Image (cartoon, rainbow over all chains, first blue to last red; front, side, top):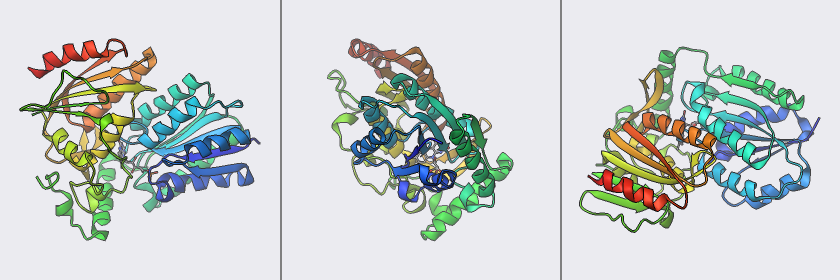
Length: 204
Length: 169
Ligand SMILES: Cc1cc2nc3c(=O)[nH]c(=O)nc-3n(C[C@H](O)[C@H](O)[C@H](O)COP(=O)(O)O)c2cc1C
């Protein structure tokens, strides 16, 4: 079994869905997996860690942002491209998006694959998660956790493969569930559904 | 109203009566931190009060936009990508169905005609990805029509000039 590094590219990494999903992933590796959040100040340190550790696999866990990769992760990729890394790990990705359709993640996945190709990294497995924002607060999370474990095992065994998850309900029901989710979210902040539905931007 | 967002100075473009022009690379705009405050705490307003706050209302109000970005790995480079992520206050948290897919409900965002110029040393594969990225943006950014144009570092000024003259009319 090789050694794995998992990097969380969510801008809210310490409190992110990507972190929760990474924790499930890590369990399948015991001591053979290092986990770090990417932030605007630790690129150099992370690159040094990659250089020093001879990882067999590098996993990026991140959310879909504006149909592509979050800008913080993009900045890190640009630094990683410049770095002179001798033993390049195989890159795998675990992406999650808020919407219901897994295919909404496809462009971000292609961006990561182009990165890998352009910079001489091999590409491994993909776990494409949709309804990634809503799932953790439902029972369906156990379905997702099962997929994450399979994704982890595929990397552990170097039998790279693609996995897909979305909430196992219809699109219509998803829409209803998401409305309840967001209404509750607002309520916890003392904001009503009506206030959240304002058509005004900057009060205009 | 019209809006130009770019990541490089074009001295032949200026803000004037109905054109707003921003070279984002000369501005201090920090990245979205994913707090969802703009949906659930101060709806329609970002909690980070930097220069992005004056740009996203203009994105919403413009019927014609011209976006010019360096391309990296088939994506917008940092400046434009940062701004797009900071523009989510113009949408609601709530979801609707559009073209048989889930998308957010837009606040007062008018439909727009978008011209997007991507420049750099771009491979064919990256061009394909970028075109598809724009076609996805179209749904989330309320484009009714869009046109994607590619340029190299060498000819970007010339191409932007030509497109800007057509676009301005
Ligand atoms: C600025 C911003 C842009 C987003 N863009 C998209 C998007 O284009 N499509 C989508 O399905 N979800 C989008 N989302 C939702 C996130 O992908 C979703 O909430 C995800 O679960 C966040 O994961 P994290 O907690 O690991 O950061 C966006 C969220 C933010 C804050």
